[in-house]
Amino acid sequence: MTRNQKVVVSIGWLTLVVVVLLLVVMIIAQTWRYTEAGKVPLKTGVILHAVNEQLLPEGLSTPSFFVNPVAPTIKRVDHILETSDGEHIAMRLYTPTQPGPHPVILYFHGGAFMEGYGNIDTHDNILRALANRTNAIIVAPNYRLAPNYSFPTAINDSFDALEWVYEEAVELEVDREKVAVAGDSAGGNIAAAVVMKANEAGYSLTSGAFLYPLTTFEDVSFPSRDSYSSGYYFLSRSVMERARDAYTPNEEDWINPYVSPLLSEELSEFPESLVITAEFDPLRDEGEAFAEQLYHAGNLVEAVRFNGTMHGFLSFYEVMGRADYALSYVARFLNNSFEGNETTQKQPFYVKKEDKGDSFQDEVEAYGMSMYLLWQKMVRLAQ
Image (cartoon, rainbow, N blue to C red; front, side):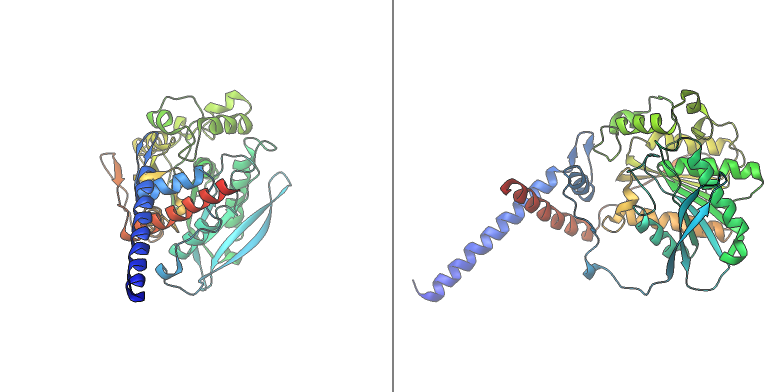
């Protein structure tokens, strides 16, 4: 056999090995789609597997060749807020570089009401993205958390932030006629409570975005709580129960409307609202029930379920096309509300199902992530 023939044979074998390895990766990645509660989209399955196996790299983001760089349009400023009880909390502002006045969105981060589960740093990517996509000022209070601070401290801190926005509107270049609230998970619960307190205080909010919110602390048997509360979908029943015990140690508080807005009989004065839910989320059904309660109380409300997603999915908008689409959906709703364009449903009530399939980019990235995860597993085994 000549030298050239040997080279050709070597290249052929190498190509065959690479093809086989790729096929193995693709087959394994496909198996990750089959979860305990059913089949999920490829990208969702890979991310769920990565997080549950603690294999997700820090700072994960979309590869740079998929991204069009843009000039910064916001500045981030940290502020200390004195609360109504004389304490101090951190607060972060994301402000457009253009002159105002600007709309303002008070955003309340999720994290089970407890230390160690969420803060303004863990939600920085969502806050930056909302600021960029709405050209609004984002005000994000780092409200105090359980177990050191139980109900109603988090709500009082968050409402103090709202009052501060109105008081400092001129200096902040805020349009007082365009003030919205938003929050995810526990933050969605707090956002609902802040709306109720704002109504009592005479403030008129423009809109509210409640993202996979916890809406009742009672032991209600929702199908989604039963199907997706193992923890594989990023929120477990045990965490919810631990959060309830830490945030509301007094059981009588569980039916307080500020804790369980689903039980409130004072929902008629809510602003135009958007309620986002995720298909594979224990909080899905109570979020949609809350949206229906808002509707029957006479409010303009839009309820949207993003299929193929799990609890907390918006945090993955940089690597998950469905999440990026959902975040743009939220931003578009808020922009329309600031511009006075009503887009929410009138009648009858229904939950809109958004099922944006994985794009080619999502598929490619999912297989690329799978290769990385398998490599990480091999490294672990070798150690």
